[in-house]
Image 1 (cartoon, rainbow, N blue to C red):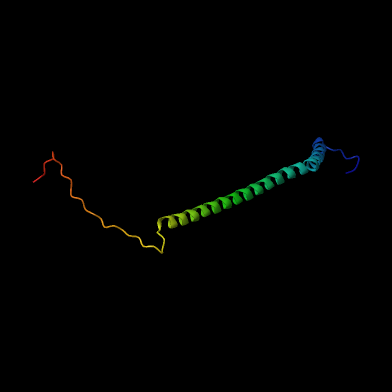
Image 2: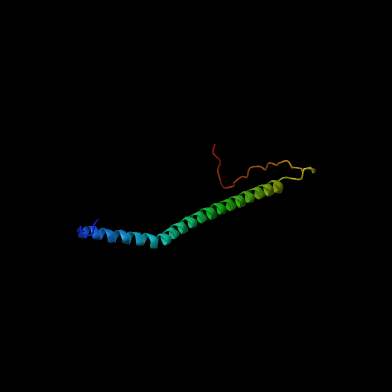
Length: 104
């Protein structure tokens, strides 16, 4: 543009707006990128913590089940080198109700 070309108010306003946008981008880009990266780091850390916690809980549950099954198995079974005697069942006669009548 030459010095004797008249500029419109809209063109002059657009230049000021462009300078303002450039200044804002230079000034605010660092904090905006910092906030976004902090959110990203926090979400990654949360993902890792939750995943690690799930693995630990799963391993503890598996260990609990294995120990409980082993204790049940050894607690109920007699030793293998001994003989276990089981008594024969006895049958008791049916009780008779003195006041009840029997159906024919």
